[in-house]
Length: 251
Image 1: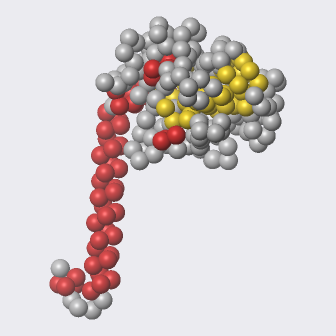
Image 2: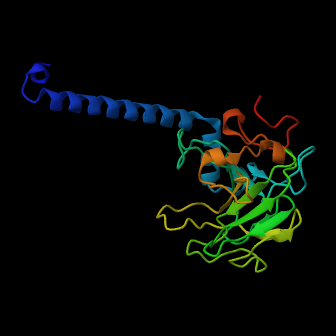
Image 3: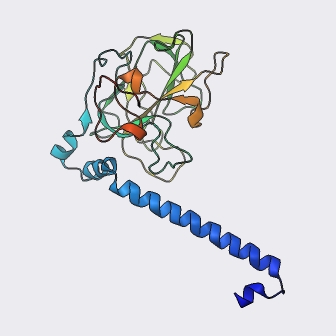
């Protein structure tokens, strides 16, 4: 305290103390969040999945080839719905939560099929290795609004895609019906050195009002998929595993 109150370079000292306090507060907040996530039952299912035991994994897999009662979409892939909409668990955070759902496959890359969740028009940008997006011109839950269905990670780690040949790079406005096979799940993660398990990332993206999709990486540009799939898929209101539900959205 005497060092701090000494007039020599007092401004610098106060700034240093402020930085240390802010840093300590950030680290404490991160530690609290980490402890909360470790004790979250949904994190325990991740540990169960990571063990690799066939019977343990089988308990976590959702297979839903037909739409849930009252829901317009079919689940685009079978697997463990491990990361949910709004999920803050790593690599996401409270300030930058997950924009969709991740469906993890109990297979090697290139084996678990990915299907169109709804009727729509497929687009594949020229530089997209593992990704497709589908334009749905009439949102089934909000008629008159255009939405986009985003599917990614459909390639191996080197970027060799598992997308059906019918959708080469540069594809525009190719109509497909619900249930059409689009490709297979993979573990491509772009230039990131972080490896990912074999899975499909699926999200519902808003239109910009002129027939173009908004940036899927921005959480504000996406929609909770719970009502569309008839499953409780929002992190804030899902206690454990997911499946068809009468009231899938948060109340």
